[in-house]
Image 1 (cartoon, rainbow, N blue to C red):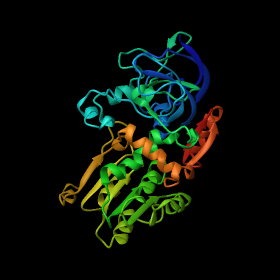
Image 2: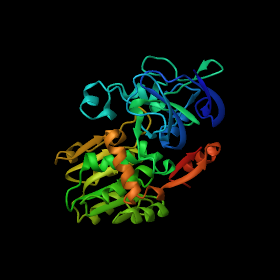
Image 3: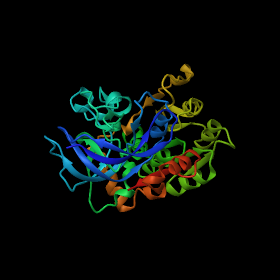
Image 4: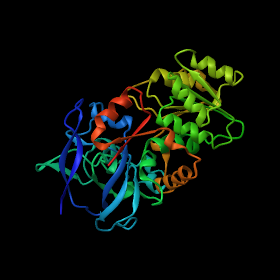
Length: 368
């Protein structure tokens, strides 16, 4: 039977998150009902809520959930009621990239996760007063006390780990970590630059600290974030408000440039700076997402010495393997994710949005 739950609804582009009662459909094939314990707030949520992406509104967002399974639909085999789960993105499971271990590049990723607002069959998971709402965001729509979640979005985790401490693993953290581990794969003595010291960038810094890279440079305009980056493993920092990023990176790498760069800001000007700092055969990983249709100019001849520019979605992670490994690192203290997190009651979601937008907090996590 359908169930009623409290959710944060965005009525239209630019409108605030408003708590209201909604109805969840009963779990269908391959779905589970999850009682939310915590969910992270991500810039992607804010981008959609602002109207910057064509997601159907009114709707329920949220895509870094963590909670406890309450019920499962037909054919669900990976989880059972009572299991603790982290929620991540969904995928079809049958296309070439899914079968090849790269579900973040699923052939149907955009409609299933970011812009569709419905199940793959076009039916709605959430309604209000009988009217369908945009939902199924990343297969979860976790800005609610309960969420109807795709099984492929669910990752079973150790029940001894506090869910409030690991909710951001579903998107931001695995994105930053995957940029380093899955794409750059630093070798002994290599150099790495992280552009932007927000949640994704600092996750990349923490990941780099667990590799043989010997030079890890964090770049931002906020001095407090740069200090935190040092505490989390950066060997050098550059304040972009005070120094030219390209010149500073070249100076820190003896004029050679960086072997790897992670761009997290979504600014095309910063992306261009990142490309200009690359060493021969270096790789720039583009993580930050500006509005659809945004273009950037690059010096083609400067790319010819084997330099690469690579786009990245969600760390190119295979979630069933990556997220439990990250949970273990958090549990062991080797991935100090708590340094990024500030907790807010779910009812204070608008305050969390304001604090995140103002740079007062790095990773807000809403608790239920």
